[in-house]
Image 1 (tube, helix red, strand yellow):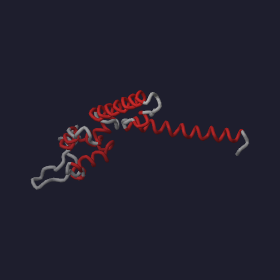
Image 2: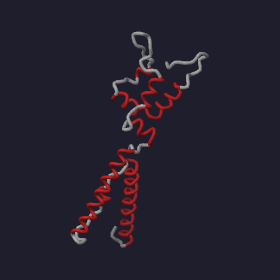
Image 3: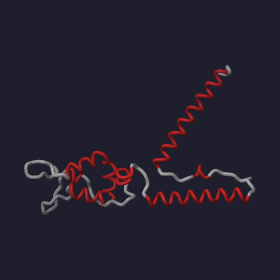
Image 4: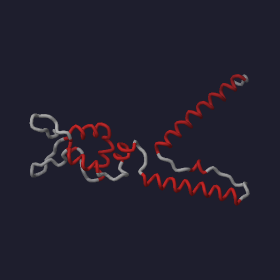
Length: 156
């Protein structure tokens, strides 16, 4: 069981660690496993050969605070699933290169070659999910409209 202060009240780090675990259990376990740390040592208050906790709540919070930006825990907890700044810069650079290529091809072919770089754009996963959901709604609405039209015309 996690440590307590004198008087039996939980130390402030313990409730913080518990709350983070409740919200991001899978992400934390995955990230710690990559570091060779077993979250079970925190859950079970496992002690080493000297009687010290292998993974205290304080150590858990320190490890989580200093995880790499690309870690799943930081991605979800700090950015709501959004990419890191470096990933966003790279994404926008690639998208700008595609827009430039599309413009160059359109000019070089005197307007005969046309392609929409937005179809191939790199997007943040959060934005892509929203776009995919909207496209799914639009497809359902289009199918309904087509079905209604065929019914009105007497084809169904």
